Image (cartoon, rainbow, N blue to C red; front, side):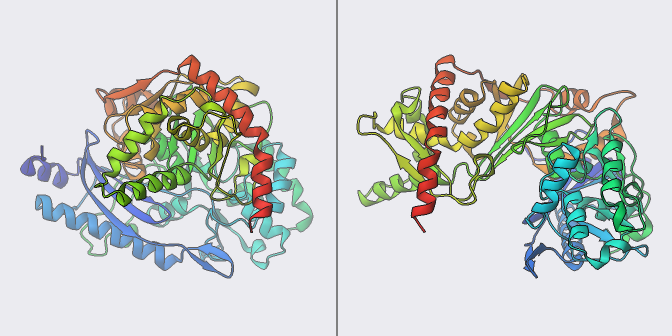
Length: 535
């Protein structure tokens, strides 16, 4: 059913809308929603990072041309579909891939090219800060980039007057406000979840660490102000309106919500911001996020800590490898079908093979596989070799073969999640699943539930992603009731009536995965030998 064109045109012209724009690593996406958070129209712009002087970066020109083209695409689609011009909007929000480093002097000039999250040039800083803070500081975090620049003796460091992330930069240029949403801020520097601000004790430790460098600034003076979801983060200035809409049609004065990171907007889009919930995204890579009730007892290399957009602590496990090898094996079966003259329907093929896995032995019949196309941080690999291995007496059936390839896709993430459940005694009521692994109904969910021993739900309608998530946050700022939490708002006003399918962990599958993961850990020596032997 399409939208009522006349009614939608009125909504657009009255500005009863929210706009969300997210800068992903390969695409900038804009989504315009109505007061019920339903998508009116979207716009896109494809872009690519570039490697310059061994730094992954996007130029300022890339950023602004990309933003303007994305907005132009959205406005054109609105005009074409509804005959309306966007003159005003109820509220606007920006989000982007997190972390990285954008440093500016007192005149607002960029001091060095934008260093994105992809750069792995900060290992020394990452290790030293983790030790000083007793808090895991990944290489991609903004503070690791700043400290590495100090360690490198880079000349620009003493001239830094402000540093921020990509989302923070765009928001600043459009509103004049040097602010960040707390979720995005948590990827710059550790957050104190009681104050929902940068951790003051760690800020002081950092200043003490670099005191002998006589840099002429204190850390607190050069970082953005931290805001939580629902707070007003300024308004679109006249200059900002011209930067966004080069035609000059869009008017200034539109309220803006705190800029967020893609982790936070993903949590909003999957309705997993409440404590004891989480989400797992399983595709080419896999990550899981769990919203915690309290701080962890110590730092773990395998766990990154960030926050929800309303400031709850989140543990994140990210693994580089998930379904790539699984997909490669499915393609072998496709080739076989083609070789025998059969017509191949990939959805049917995936469905048949995935469902076959449910017939296998709980522990995969003694089979072992690793889908390491690349290195895997959680298990200590700098590079990988896809591998399938078995003993002569293992039960080598199609069902067990498919099952072991599904299980191993979640092997590394299981090890990370086990730290939370078995060492930190974190309890989760539910995980929301999204991504390619969940396309065949029931199978991916059943395997994930077995791996983490937590019920897994998948929404009937796939979420619209991060651009929609930040549009929802923009609406929340404008439309929330007094004292209404983000979690309540999402449950009652965004996802109420949303259909989902929930799969509970099966005790036999859980026990089978535990047996498999012990075999997986022992077999890492085989994977290591494969890396050494196959060059």
